[in-house]
Image (tube, rainbow, N blue to C red):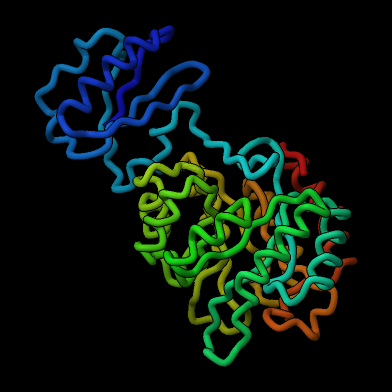
Length: 338
């Protein structure tokens, strides 16, 4: 349930409304917008059924949230959009942000070379995997804490905030100590213990859609993070598995405008995993931005042919520069900047 207050309500009146709700065993979340303030009521709403909330000073209207994802629902936020700050970058504003880097951190020299190249081309964040979930147990699974240390060093040199994947609740605090944003990958989208843990860390979260997940599943996964108090969540469409074998995944372009209408959270796309081929990254990225995406996450490698993971979908430095140059036109056509 959400309580919409009248314009010009005082902080003291907001506190009294919260106290009334919390006295019944519910939690509250206050979202202050330019034209209204929304107080979200989290918990067993049946306890509010017979409470005359409209008679409470400062209350303008009361609305039930019918969707199963209460905190992620668009109505829950006063301004209808949430801006997620990662370092000094902001997802959900006018600018589309691009995170770029290799699938895996393979070494210090390679990572520094890549970080410098993507920063020069206009990337807003640096991506790279230190802990890697692999389909085969015999594949390279990352440098672990050494990889985190390398990412932190490259951040110092380039000024780019860092996003990396966390796989295990036991590692969440360790990873959060090195990076600016925690990524929950497709394989872990419904790892509820992990979602709960990162929800307690107050670190921005990049949540990727699972390989066979519905959009409702994705938003309920976000709800797990947000229910623990962390509302700084960015959603990522990265393609889903279907019967098609021509591409690595099937890119659900319609998911982007649907999510933008259904939730207040920023939405980005991963054209690298969506297509699984280097030549498909640019057109899928253009389509995502044109559809309203708040940014992209793209794999870039100095020598894709020798990459330890996902070389087929990794762009060369020159190809990434061209992507960024051409992407600006699509962002501009969508009323955004890059």
